Image 1 (cartoon, rainbow, N blue to C red):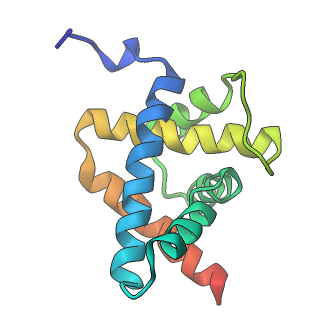
Image 2: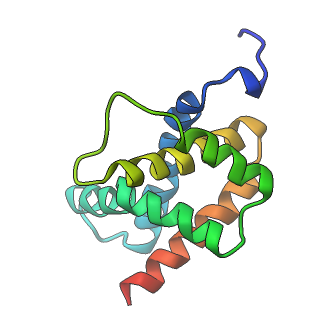
Amino acid sequence: MARFTLDDVPALSLAFLGDAVYAVYIRTFLIKEKPYLKPDQLHREANMLVSARAQSEALLHLKNEGVLTAAEWDMAKRARNKSSATRAKNATIKEYRNASGIEALIGWLELHGAQDRIGILMQKIIERGRDGDE
């Protein structure tokens, strides 16, 4: 494996990794919370929770609640401000960029080996989602 520093990894590559980690947390949560759902139902629910709009709301919630450290917010902003050739369906450019920000942050934390911190952030995101459902 080639040696690298996190500074060498482009923000959108961090988002690529973070997207996968985020999805695994959401899928794990759904299976534990609703083990009776069939895979197609799980897929639909997971897609709602990992949509660009939902991820954008999650990032802004973490920021507004003061959950993110300055370094974490800087990482999210770095990715958020990168332009991409694609954008999500059913989401604004701003939502898509915010979603890239939370994904890059999760990817950055994953590469730092900060799984405990990812767990804390994902728990806050999931709790917020539960509150929004009520």
